Length: 374
Image (tube, rainbow, N blue to C red):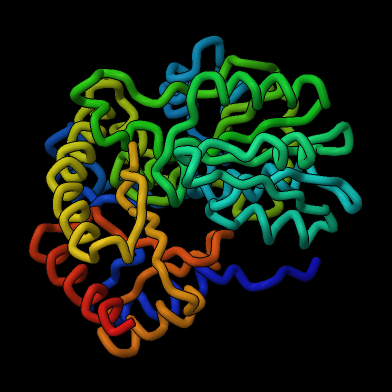
């Protein structure tokens, strides 16, 4: 298969280690191995662990711990992958064929724009509308999801808006998928990264269990703050998991043995709560800074405050294409941000708000200095 470049990932991988300020990130500053040690990860024991192959679909202990997060799931419902991105990739390979149709929510992380197209699938988009509080355009949704649609992809909480679908919207999406016989893939890697979840005790509800057509992907990268170990997972009907495992055998075979061990520590319920609380604390500290920065532009910038996630999707009032604008910021300010065109929505930029105070302050100053020239 011939696949087109993943524009956002290529831009980030090209420049994120060369600019002075990387404001293109989408998670909070990562946990350290020392911090994981305080949660019970035995660093000394790890030093003596033979670095051989691990169980290719995830160790039984890890799959049991992940399955416990999804009511009614067993280890047969879980596949452990190398990050959530591999989980989504495996599902596309397993479920889509040449001539199939797929519905894609935009704006979004556009991985499942490129991969399905490389498989010969037709993509039908439906839009989340800022003026509707980032709820779906239902006319577009109804047109995009038909009996011909094999798969619907959404992210909830959403990347890049940080929005969370209402319960009514979730039920409407599921009902449509059941009516059309369509699989619903809900990427929930930001579940637990809600800004006020630790205060309200109400994390984003999962789509899991709402229908036997529902598939969920998630991982350690965002809400947990552990992207570097590259652990994700799929929760799905056993038949789908079996098909994904077959694809996995041909792709990366299995997850890293040390990463699997780290993941077993992280997904322990007590440690998961600690990771989520840390993420919430970082975001609650940084949100007022982002709020003040946007307000300083006196209406030139428009946003809806995110409910979850370490990023802000911001609409700007200019005709300059978003990629051109972001290139100006990179070249003139040595600072990287994400153009809306790489997220499926022109006229916007995505800016990180998950860093340390001094980093965030200087990064925003640099972005602002360039924005003020237009």
